[in-house]
Every structure is written in C-alpha cells, then in structure tokens.
Length: 328
Image (tube, rainbow, N blue to C red; front, top):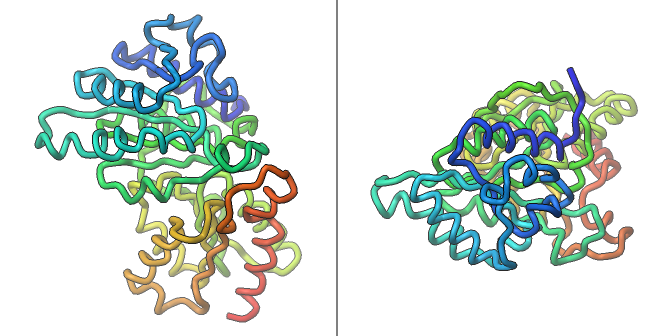
C-alpha cells in the first residue's frame, strides 16, 4: 500500500468528502492560499475555490459561531483552529452553543460540525501554543473528542467525523504531521469509539492516544528486548465516545495498567480512565496499582530541552513500567 504523511491523510479526507458532498466546506484563518496550519490544506483552495475554502478574520469566537449557525441550517462545516490553545477564545460557542443546541431544541435539527486543531507540544512553540487540552472538552456533554495517531486513522476518523451529525473536536498532534504510514486511496471510515490494539502483550497494558502511541510502541519494543516484558498497547483513538470495553479488556488481560498521555497529570484524561477501570471492578484483578505517566503540571516551556522534560519520554515509560512490573 502507498505511504503518505499525516498531513496528506487529512487533506485527502477533506478533499474526498468535499467531492462527494456539496454541503461540506472549510473555514478558518489562512486556510486558503497560505494552506492552513502547518501547510496541511495546501492546494485545496485551487481545487475547490474560495467559496468552499473560506479565509476568515482573526476571530475564533466569530467564525466558530458562524460555523455553528451554518451547521444548524443544513451545511457541514469543517473549522480549522490554528492551534488548539485558541479553542479557548471560542469556548462559549463550542461549549454553550454547539454542544447543547440539539438537546435544547429537542433534536429539531442536526449539528454536523468538525473543529480541527493542531495540539500538543514538540515544536518549540511555547506555553500558549503547545497545550494538550483534550480533558477540558471530554467534560462537556454533547461534544465528541477524537485524537488519532497514524495517517490511516487520521483519514478514516476524519471522514467519520465529517459524516457525524454531532459536533466533533478533532485534535491532530502537530509533530505527527510529517509521519508516514500506509493509507488506501479509496474512501473508508473508522467508527468513532472503537479503540485499536497496536501491539498484543500479556504482562502490562499501556493505554494511550495521539502522539504517545508512538512513545508507547517504542518503549514496548525496548522493554521486551531489555527486560522480557510483554507490553499490550491500546490506542483509544477517540476519547468521547470511549471504547470502555477495550480498556477493561486490556486491564483484565495483563493485570497491570499504565495510562500514558502528554497532557498535564492534574485533571487529565488518565484520571477518568483509572476511574472507569476501578468502577468496573477490574481493579480488584490488578496485581499492581494503576500507574499514570503524564506531562508535568507546568506550562510548556519554550526551551527545547525543558519542553522535552515536560512530557513523557520513551526512557521514562521504560523505567517506570519496568519498575511497576518488578514490584507487582
């Protein structure tokens, strides 16, 4: 199968959906000639024109609000936010409008809205452009939250998100854009709420998503080589809806659980995962306490050295997971 980058996978998903459905259009800051954040959308304005690839003023509150109204009246907007940090300037439109409108109007209309945003650290973009804010939005009923890790998943999950009838926050970890992987040319969907086992193992389960899937896989290979530890790696792919069955199954299979994410530990999504495992009763089958490996509770530094120290590394996952297995 051909290999393409995560950037190309996003662009191809959008283009295929725009070709198949005239109601789909894209809007955001510099999405036209400039090509969007990190050049992900290059070529789309030449292909579909400025009516369907719409540059907006620098006002997230304004154009997200416009997209909510557009979705309510029958179109299927895709909004690009330059950095996920800037979602915070449109919180009222996302949280109090998009997430609640279908409920408040008793399902009188659908609200098919996708909000794409590059998220996370790794590019030296500093504290206001490097946050991982997914946990904030998983707390909001009415929103779906997706965090892919590979080009294949980016394309399939984005197509499913565009076709969904609910507002979807689609978080693209920005360091993954150049990463390559096999992706079919043809159209396909990956259902939201279906996790993926990336590696089967019996000694410990690492439950993660987004960029940290690759950290987990790198650590898993070394753990097996150095320590003979068989690591089960589960990629959640979407946080809302959550594949709780896959999470519980991984915990029961290995009896040891590591929850890994680059977002800060305090209030992070890892706490929700641990609570789901405990609430299900699977915790009584565990041979060790649930281990959370998360980002530090600090703003992301500008310094590359400090930035790397602020989020989990492969070596940290190796050392802490090995220790968990030794003392279980």
